[in-house]
Every structure is written in C-alpha cells, then in structure tokens.
Amino acid sequence: MLSIDELNEIHLDVLREIGNIGAGNAATSLSQMLNAEVNMSVPKVRILDISDAATALGGPENPVIGILTKISGEIDGLMMFIVGQSFAGAVLESLLGEKQVSYAALTEMQLSAISEIGNIMISAYLGSISTLSQMSIKSSVPAIAVDMVGALLSVPAIEMRTVSDKIIFIQEDFLSSADDITSNMMLIPSMESLDRLMQKLGIQL
Amino acid sequence: MSNMITIGISDMKVVKGSEQLVTYALGSCVGICLYDPLRKVGGLGHIMLPKFPVGNPKENKYRFADTCITEMLREMERLGACRAQLTAKIAGGAKMFEVSGDSAFGNIGQRNVMAVRAMLAYAKIPIKAQDTGLNYGRTLYFTTDDGVMTIKSFANGVKVY
Image (cartoon, rainbow over all chains, first blue to last red; front, side, top):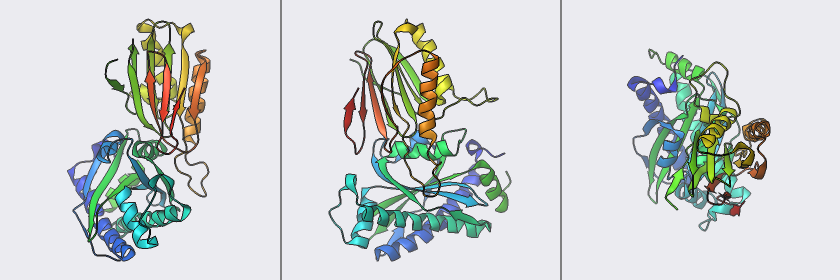
C-alpha cells in the first residue's frame, strides 16, 4: 500500500492540481462571501511533518483558528482548515460588520461565522477531488477550535494513526482588495483512500 | 542555566544538572516529566499515543506512553537517577475538537492520560502534579533545578506546579 512517505513527484503533481482546482472553487466562494474580488496564488502543496507544518504556520505556539471535518464515503479521513487572525478579521468584518475582534474570546456568533466559511472552503476542495476522481465524498459538520497551532495539528495525525507524523499541506494566498490572507488546508486521507484516489485518477502507484 | 532544550513531538530527552526543558503545544498528546530531586536528573517525554503497536518493532519508542516511559527510566538511571526517588508531573491529553454526533472523536487525549498513569503506577512512580484533559493546548516547561513544571496556554494563562 502507498505510504505518505513514498509519494513521488507525479503523486504530488496530482495533489497540487487538486489543490489548484479546489482553491479556484474556494476563491469563488470566498469572493461571494466577502463580496470582494479575490485573486489567488498558485497553491503550494507539500508533505510535511507536523512540526514543520507548525513552523510554516508561525511556530507551534502561534494562535490560530482550526476548522475540522471528518470525511467519509469513497475517501475517508480528515480535512482541517487553518486560518490566522487576518483571515478571521476579514470574514467577520464582511459577514458581521465587526471590526474590533477579541481573538482570545470569540463569541458563539463569530465562531459560527468563521466555522461556516471554513466549511465552505473545505467543501470547495472536496468538490474538486470528487469531480476529478468521480468518487463520492461526504463531510461531517465542522468542529472549530482557537488554540496553539501545534496542538491543533497533532489532532489529525493522531486520529488517523498515520504511522508517520506527516500530513498533506496545501497553502495558498488569497489576495482581496483589502487584505492578503493565507488559507491553509490540510488533507489527511487514510492510506487506503489515497491509494483509491490515485488509482481512480489513473496514476501508477 | 544553559539554553532551553526543546523536546519535539514523539520525542524524549533526559538531562543531569540544572537545565530547562520545554515541549510546545501539547494537544491530545501528553508531556511526562520525571525527576530525581537528589541527583538532579530529569526527563521530559512528549507522547502521542497510548501503546506501542504489536508487530511493528521499527516504530519510534518515544511516540507511545508505555515505551517512552520505559526508555526514559532506563536513560535516567544511566545518568545516576534512583528509581525509588523519582516523581512525575504530567500535562496534556486535551480534547481539542468537539465533533458533533461523534462523541468518541478526540477521546485519544483521555486514553493517553490513562495510559501514562497506568505505566507510572506500574513503575511505582508517584504523580505529584497533573494538568490534564479539558479542551485547550498547553506548552510545558520543566526545570531540573527544582523540578517545577510550568504550563502555559493560549487562553487559560500560566500555571506553576
């Protein structure tokens, strides 16, 4: 069976392309939600250790917002969407008209709004995977947490019992008129699912 | 005191003398501090899962509560620690996400804590302090000068044990 350590350049290209299409969908959704033009960078797709992912996200203690869903169906695993203060700020200002936000004490309404954006972004990525692979994928109601990024990142690795501490990390910048906001999407498929996905896409393992 | 020594995820280090050890952002992972106050030998482990898997001998021993503690004891004794003097302080094992309709999700934190407690009981090492469970991440500092464990979190302040 394919192991996440053994992904080669072709596999990465496939994941990158999925990331690209997903990001395109996500940018469209985001643009509609924020009611602003949104451009995006070419996504960076990397396979990272949890600790390297934490470094890429500002260090293990950096406070972030994580939105997590379980995915099931023909692909099972987890998706986690991680955003920082600027992303949350842009969303809350646009959706709720709130400019002053206390990051450490977000209200139910604010959490719910950010969670919904996360859900839409995750769905955009899952939609692209589903369309490309012709596989049906369901996602759970999202769960949200505001905490140190290192503590959030360990959750998928532990839940999926990945033998290595690695995750698929898709990072891209969305540029709207007002802000430069970075979206970080983590895809943590079960290894069986990753096999199935590659096979469906006609990639030799 | 020299520079801070960082313990990564699924990692463990032991030291002799006055050092400061740190492990960042424990979520459902558990940090285990062991300390011999007379000989000033201390160790800190950061485990992810409860039990070393059967039939996979190449696995990282520090990833699992049972094997990490065993290894830590061995290395501490090599530095002159006396088993009968050891005490433990532990932290972590949170449930970071509450997934609706799936109450079992995230219970690994609790299972990690139980596994650590069971292993320490088996090794007859008393637990002097614990800051475990709940729903937030913790950074753990451990000074081997005095055996003090300090827990820092994003929204719940600093606690000293």
